Image 1 (tube, rainbow, N blue to C red):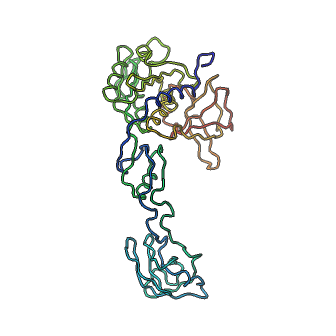
Image 2 (image 1 turned 60 degrees about the vertical axis):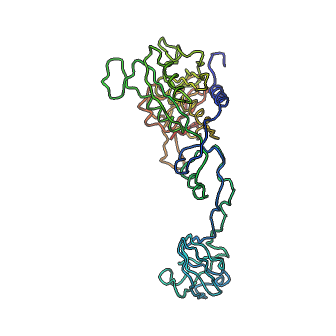
Amino acid sequence: MSADGLREVEEQQALILSRVEAIGLVDARSIPVPAALGRTLREPLRARVDIPVFDNSGMDGFAVRFDDVMDASPDRPVRLRVVADLPAGTALDPPVAPREAARIMTGSPVPTATDAIVPFEDTAGGLADSLGEIVVVRAPRRAGAHVRRRGEDAVVGDELLPAGVELGALQLAAAAAAGVAEVVVSQHPRVVVVSTGSELVAPGSPLERGQIPESNSELLAGLVAGAGAEVVLRLSVPDDGDGPLRAIAEASALGADAVVFTGGVSAGAYEPVKTLLTGAMEFTGVRMQPGKPQGFGATDDGVLLFGLPGNPVSAAVSFEVFVRPALLALQGRSELQRPILRLPAQTAWRTPPGRRQYLPAAIDRSDPARWTVRPATGGGSGSHLAGGLARAEAYAIVGAETDAVAPGDLVDVMLIS
């Protein structure tokens, strides 16, 4: 920790991840492939069948012997007799003698006796004249042309995916193509979300002086789900009373893996999380803006406790920087951080002195060859600007040593959507 008492972002991240490592991963289970979207793979995915399963045609056309047609041209066409018709799904493997061909559709098994495919468009009659006798007017490039060979993508036992990756649509399609019916994945971490503040009321309720709609639980519920976790309880508690203690007790009863508090962690007179949970949690300032006040700890039975600032932008940034990596680590995810791009700034903005800035930002993609980044709101990184979060698709990250950003300056950009 530095002379001013602030902890670096990386120090806080390392502390949190070391506690996650000590606690260990959430349980794993085997589930059907269709149910695994968004889950974290816990065991390598290996092919159970070859991909492709058999030699098959990559084109609609004719399975031929290459030697028969290797010299075919418009000036010297080659005539072949069609002796079989092979739609996709057929089990036939017909004999094909010299000067013979089999009509074949894309994906159909290639007859053993043939070694090339002539597409319909390389014959004089095409599909309209594809039975009986055909006239080949263009030779295939080589033997094996348009033949998809068995196992050219993967063979039985090949590792298609390592453990630790997120299973998206493309990954699950690969699993299905490889004959895999079930995958071993992490359970969803179970999370309790607690908003603190006597000023908070349900959205849509009539507002009295000093009251505001409670939005942080909605924010965090969505962020938790996006991190592959599950919200098992959402609470809003006032600044007085023992709400934070009751929340932890309920979290333990529910078998939760983490509790995320927003508000009550700063230096004010009414900070219930800090007042009631000092000891179970450590509260510190981190060299970042927004999100300077942070709390973290764990219960005796291993429930992670996160204390985030109450202002919505601060809560969102703090989740991205500290909570999301921890939830991914609980699942055994190999990549814990968001992708970072380096983009030129579209406009100028000020940065906080001596602290790393996480600015809610929008990306201008109008020029595909030169994306630029700009603040999502006119108010910059003000921690109270909840409405501007709706326009943010990234956070522009500016180092503590930088006083201001000028148009054209290259800026690190964390993609969040």
